[in-house]
Image (cartoon, rainbow, N blue to C red; front, side, top):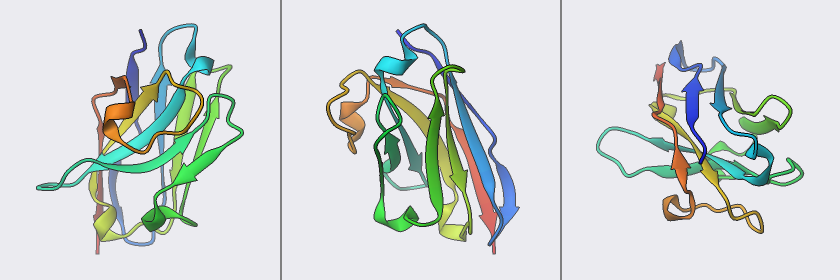
Amino acid sequence: QVQLVESGGGLVQAGDSLRLSCAASGRTFSRYTMGWFRQAPGKEREFVAGISYSGGRTTYAEFVKGRFTISRDNAKNTVSLEMNSLKPEDTAVYFCAADNTILVIGVREIEYDYWGQGTQVSVSS
């Protein structure tokens, strides 16, 4: 069982940066693949970025490549999402998720077993 709590969201202007953090409970954090998803109003939840259990592999959605960076600190049970050059279309609730399958980095919601409550990111033009 893993409990996830996101933080770091807020209201920023286009071009600004934000760093989201996700704190995980439990002693087995390093065994989970971690991911970030987002959901904008009226839209389905979509994959943003994922990182392998060791942190050695990452994958990103095309629309954030070169702007967002996912990282993790297994000693501190945290995963972060550094977001640069934010755009109004990045406005959404951002969710942290954990997947106990370590072989691949999932990009679908159904592949993740545990979810945080989300943190709002709003980008004004």
